[in-house]
Length: 319
Image 1 (cartoon, rainbow, N blue to C red):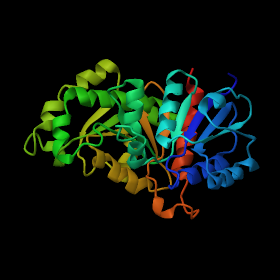
Image 2: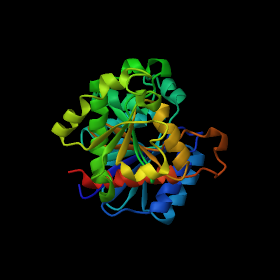
Image 3: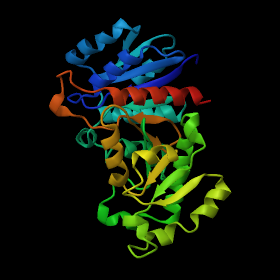
Image 4: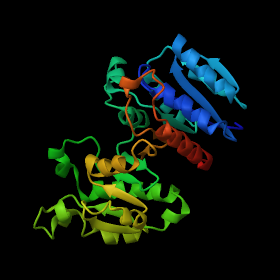
């Protein structure tokens, strides 16, 4: 194939996915050596909105992925589908796994739509794990100010400690190291900063034992793997602005420990979610469906712009 193919899924039809995707493509324009395949629902409204892209792209409309994959050249392939958005993600993941696609970027998809499709998966990540048969997957977030990898995902706060161990932490650090190596040169040589779990990073065991159980062996392991590492960092001070340039990536031990500072800092103006550990490239927005502003042309596209931009970057690096 002469072009690297990237599939864009637009999520819930009554959410902002199609809006932010169209705005992203208009902002970025055609990308050299890249062909976009755009999944959207086959509705009159969607067909009307998608015509906005004709200002910058040569568009061809088909109704399924198999036909879309046959098309090469300088075209935006518009897939007007009658499948559920959850099935778009599943079909795209299968095509990525077979190297028929080089990357995928996803707009928000609600758990309700996934359930309505008959899937048992709780979200995008579970669909991707099932298709790729991958067990160890981590959520990564790339921002203009700093980047974060979560050692645990959607785990109740009461169970976080049970899900943490030396091996789960090293798995997360390994994925953070992959992300570190993809970041701009200014960050590649900087260490990964690993947060402690407890206040004051445990205060030598006076406020919890988790740090004493997980961290003592980390320096030797990191040296063997040639991974620059610092930690445990005190969680309530780690994200001070003066610390952002000290680290290539932060590893947060639970969901909100990393995402509260990330989202408060980056807001809706930047930030992209990347699934780390699966054998293909998937980027995504770092926000939800925002159905309360559907159809109002108010959605901020910056996260989707970042998601598409990073998908393009990774696809170009892919052999």
